[in-house]
Length: 276
Length: 230
Image (cartoon, rainbow over all chains, first blue to last red):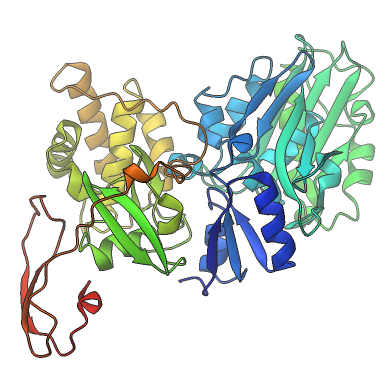
């Protein structure tokens, strides 16, 4: 199908985006690679009056690295990460996840910020970045604010952005060298959106044990202390077995198909990979 | 309407488009480059896959206006490309196509496999082809064809030009804002004249490129509006 009519503007600075968004008062949509928004427009599931191209803005393809983490600009593509054009030292999980997102032709244009803002619960970036404790850097052109990704995602296809705000970058804290992170998605065909997904971070040095269940009916389910699911101190080499009672409790009422069994399996497999 | 400058198969073109026009429709409807096929229009089937800045991308969910200043290469522009010559031969030999609808997209993806992943095994080939749907062949012939060309490549039968990408961000995007000196030359086809009832002739396809087939259409211009013909 073809999209409904829209106007098009190209923003050259963060301030310009904010001005356009403010003036459009909710009827504008930001576009970068368009690999999530494109299908939504073509299917007429969204009908913005204005589309704002943000790809000319230099800040959005910027990478900053410090001792504690990595800041990835919102317009960095999945294939930039897959190919290592963006150096992700200490975070090899990012390239692994990137390679499993959709298809190469989509990854060449699809951006990390776009995927997060689209907020499809079945998307891959949100669960894995939530497990890593990533934060969103949001700007209104004048000042930036930070909030944890799990708070940024409000519900299915909804994020906490004010009318004139834009996701500028994602900050990913670098886990310790011995940390293990894994992601597992259940899908019937390579590259598909997940039917269920699980992400696990085991960082004993920093005492961070996080688990995330993705492809839910809304926001990812984040378990800040995964020890209640995985046992006291998860040891590498031990078989990962989810605590059944705690898992059931977690998945109950989440409205997931098959009572969340597929999601429990995805999480267990991610845990097994992280502990292998 | 929005003006957009693109380089299509090496030829610079300036088009005035509705922002909602996707790249595939621009190529097919305006430039007569019908080798790029459109089916699902949601990025799933892969029929519309072509090269943007030398990298495969979906032209159905990429609007033309997003590609200001980009280099577009369609299947027509790869006629003499050594990898594509080998792939076409292999697709024929291995029964890699039947109806041909998915073939342009398949060939573009296959070319990406050969150039980017010269050591790919069958599993990897299948994984990389998962974004291109074929409803005729069952993929067996396609996978065999790609394997054959990879083997030819390893045996040194042809040379692959590297297409390494350095720039970050979506392929095709972010070129806007080039200096004014980079303004393109329009490739508008000269028309007969602007008076009503003039006979016109328009050559479909891209000027300066040898098309696979050449179609010439003669017609009477009912109204003196050159732009209606383009």
